[in-house]
Image (cartoon, rainbow, N blue to C red; front, side, top):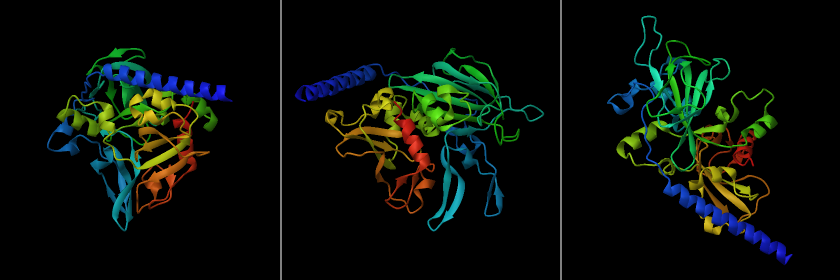
Length: 351
């Protein structure tokens, strides 16, 4: 028994040595975040940002409207009237960028380019293979884990898988492929994502019957950050890193999961780790999450749990389901994982 205990401690110590070594290597290899706009539309930096976003068609309480705000990132869709005012319960994971040039028939002509240096990892050339329509995914590595930009609703694709790109490399033409988009509402849907799990395919087969046509680059496996906010922060501070930007996000819920080894996502994104000096015999991990489902930090915890458990949630007078993409249920300061939430946690912790 004593030998087994010593072996267990040795494994944990070796893991910590590996972890701290990996963190040092990553920090030493941080690269400058070169970020450019994906289309010729520059209105996000101008006096009228409404000209940057494509509107959505909305009917609320019998009144039709075309709010440009529906093209922004975040909870900007499906309005609901509450005692606290109107809130929005549907999350939009990217930004919808309106075209600035069309031909005489109203067809958009804007070229779409890579927002940063990287490598093309996925091209979905069939307009009906996804709600994204035709889309492209590019991998970027700035030294602190790999991030993925996604360009959707494309009219055509001019890049190939494996191609290296630079900031501003032309990859496609803006279009209106995908569900619910017509020529009038043609736009580029742009995301910048973390990858949730490298073992996505195994998780997918447990929960879906239809074949996965997009591999690791299925939208389910990509968690979008606030790219419009990043553009503005980057303009003010070109030396900002993505971990610095993400860590400014307000936490919404904290999750305890049994310790079955270092979470894979923490190996993919070492900057998520917090208080790792305490990770010697911790029975659980505490994962801090944003409203959108972005992990903000992972730290060892001394509470033993047998299954994923909500450890804290921000107070909300409205249902937590409206603030968490239906991953939590409850309100005020009480919450539980829904079936959707449990599946998400399973993906997050997939080994």
